[in-house]
Image 1 (cartoon, rainbow, N blue to C red):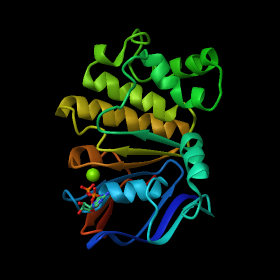
Image 2 (cartoon, rainbow, N blue to C red; image 1 turned 180 degrees about the vertical axis):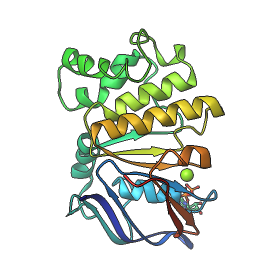
Image 3 (cartoon, rainbow, N blue to C red; image 1 turned 90 degrees about the horizontal axis):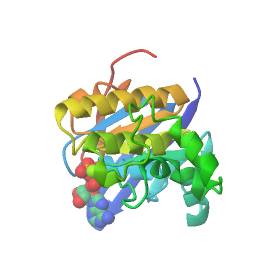
Image 4 (cartoon, helix red, strand yellow; image 1 turned 120 degrees about the vertical axis):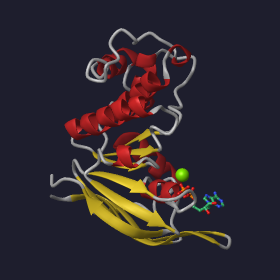
Length: 227
Ligand SMILES: Nc1ncnc2c1ncn2[C@@H]1O[C@H](COP(=O)(O)OP(=O)(O)O)[C@@H](O)[C@H]1O
Ligand SMILES: [Mg+2]
């Protein structure tokens, strides 16, 4: 199957700290990749570099074969809005908006009228177990519910790749399992690839593959299932 996103020879330094020391990674359509490793090993830097948020000092990032690492900021931020979805540790939902508008936000930012955007977002509520919560503000949702709204938001614009940095980091074990099951299942349904950073081996086990990162390098690579 064809490669959707690839990083080759990625190097990123912060002063004397080498956050990435030459990383190669490829993800394909419907592929789910977990990135694990100790704190400070470069996991978030790798995710942000693949997502066009951090520019590497050396190496290339390719989306469907096109180099994006040299693109300007405006072009990159448009790319992130249109082609990528994001789930972070703390959902980063807008507190004043109801859940359905939070989920619809990427479409509204693209100019889709509010009504249409919300209608598309609402389609995600049943499969994500959020039915009946469309009007709730984030402050009225549990941590797990808020992360499921964040998953809806990440998927609503039908991205090529979903990036998740510690998406279950603030959840208890049972809720983590629910959230990662929904994240991996729903992302696969859309045909997107998933790149997820996690500390939790049980969470990583829901992905097809696990990359171990240590001191900015890939120190191990395992496959759980054959897609
Ligand atoms: N913006 C930054 N400025 C300076 N150092 C940074 C910055 N971001 C990350 N680092 C350093 O790069 C290394 C890798 O960080 P990070 O990718 O956040 O690790 P992880 O996500 O695995 O905990 C760490 O030593 C961290 O302190
Ligand atoms: Mg991190």
